[in-house]
Length: 186
Image (tube, rainbow, N blue to C red; front, side, top):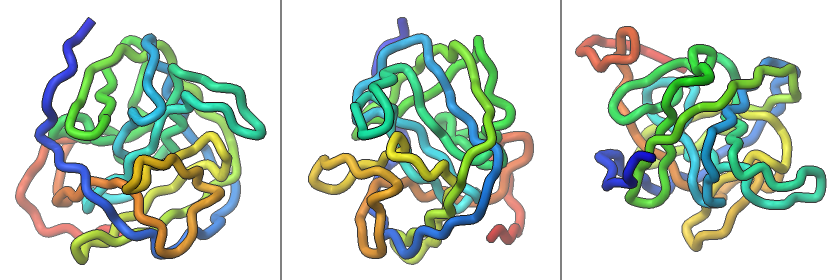
């Protein structure tokens, strides 16, 4: 088992600007071969400008029992941040490694399997330090975020002004590796 260690990534608070239904699409669930805490999650986003911290399903909701090994990471097209690199969620595979973030710590966990299914999706848009970040996520109470006071809030409870944790990055990558280039992503 890998040791938990300090991360190089800085999580910060961002303010939700809007949550917009966008229809049915393919979302990705990552089932780890480990137990995750309720405040551990992955960093995902539509663009390389930044990522939202999406938490594990290690909590009971009105419609789902706890799945302490699972993270519902969102739209298949999204980037997932992996300690300085990115991959597309579509590239995640069982037998690989996932980095989960919790406060100032990151740990490696093995991926047991990846599930891709059609589900109702929403686009969450937020801003932090003048940077616009967005993510495409399943509209389900099992998809959650961490607020400033440590409260866990589901995507169904998000509203304009909610503050949740995220991470800023600089766009410009080739095969997941950072490169210098001028790029526009929306």
